[in-house]
Image (tube, rainbow, N blue to C red; front, side, top):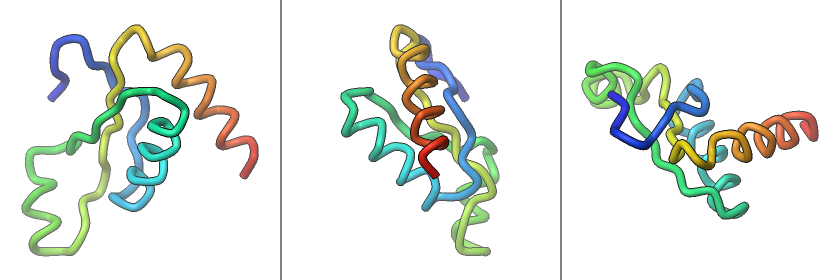
Length: 77
């Protein structure tokens, strides 16, 4: 579910990856939040220990800068 004004930047493979991306963006001054990509993700955490994908959302005006930062971050690794 995407809230008004927030857009999906990327889908992380799991909660740990989402936390790393979110923290990186936060350090760079990009507001962001995590959202489950599926309504079943919460149940998967309880039953299986982790969700399959977690969406990282940013406010639409920050999308371009966030993409550039994320590309730079991925290039370093």
